[in-house]
Length: 92
Image 1 (cartoon, rainbow, N blue to C red):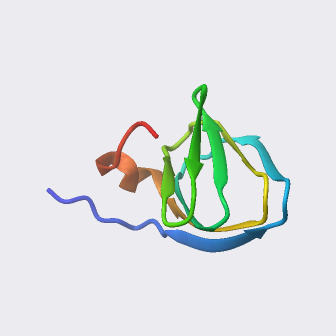
Image 2 (image 1 turned 90 degrees about the vertical axis):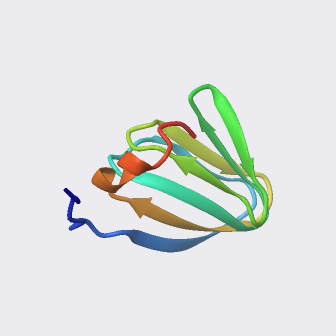
């Protein structure tokens, strides 16, 4: 039986100044961060993942994470509602 997807995906594009940082947080939605320019550093689970342009980082639901960029950067992100994350990786 197929599960009907009633949740909404949220997309956004973010432009960051040099030395930008987002404090640690977590949320029920999974998140995919795709670097458009610059390098995005995402720390989670005791590891640091780097996303230069054309690469991305998957952040599973409820996983605490923080991000930082040393230089100006831009990224596109999509938040995936938790019910839709079941078919996606459980790890970054």
